[in-house]
Image (tube, rainbow, N blue to C red; front, side, top):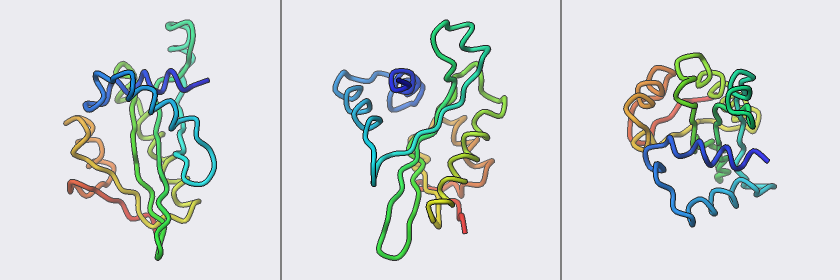
Length: 142
């Protein structure tokens, strides 16, 4: 039931500010997938936001895909979004912590990110939490 809010939050991503109906339908379908190869998504909630919006408490999310290679597993930080009014309150850090913890639990050796898709402020955040700053940035997990 969180799919609609997650897709709505995706509009804050630079590449998704104007999602077509087809792109929106693909995102819904990918969010509904389960089993091996499914993207794992975690949300951040705020009672303050629920009271203001009247329908949801979700103020952010992080989505991670796990890539099982021949030699090792890597995790791909596919998307991370925080509602603009809730940025710089630790929400992004908390979502990142959940993503890295889960990637380690799944045996991933690295967490990868295409930093070129992020906004300048998001790029600054990613560098501050340890991504190396290359186009495809990485953090070693073990």
